[in-house]
Image (cartoon, rainbow, N blue to C red; front, side):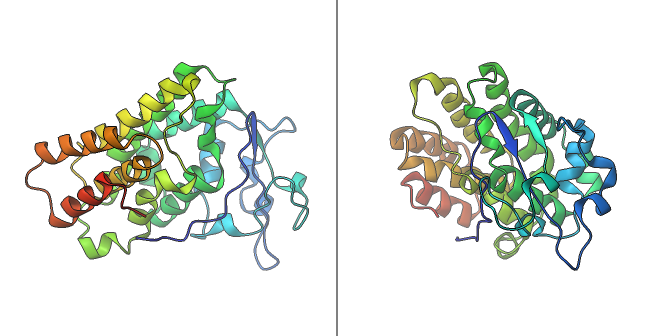
Length: 265
């Protein structure tokens, strides 16, 4: 299934800068969320950071005057920005993925869907898993924590969706695209072997979650990995999944067969 992917910001190795401006017919960021503006050094508490991501009223807020780094169109980069230390960014992402309960209670499914596109796609934040300035143990923990956000956020919020609904539901679609938004494939560099192992581990573990939405997302990630990394390993993971789950819905079984050979999009 093809899904339109929002434009991505250019990945940044040490700091991440995001610029979002208001349109002429809508309040500026300062007017809408005055209590989450960063201090001059760009610091945000975890709670402010979460509000910055989720507390929006538009399902496509990240599209509006999103400034790619280096672009000179739109409002000045300095007007709406914050900068995170990579280690703190990794810590905040891990905490969010491990403890998503407050988000699921406070924000709507549409807000969570658009925030998912932002976190895993437009922000390029997940490139922090490759950042050598962050301790490897913290980066491995970040990748492992994706299993928790699958289990504690996406699975319960998408419970009960029928096949037709899964193909149309904004949150289910966002979850499906997690590994494809910013090309989160296992890295091939020898120095990133720990990150690669964590990604394979979380993809296989997530197949044990009894959620069609989550399983399809993990299979999508494995299918993309098939022809970009290790097809034999992907096939073995999916074979184990199929052997252990004989009563899968037909469309999940069929998708698993396609993912086994990299036939996903």
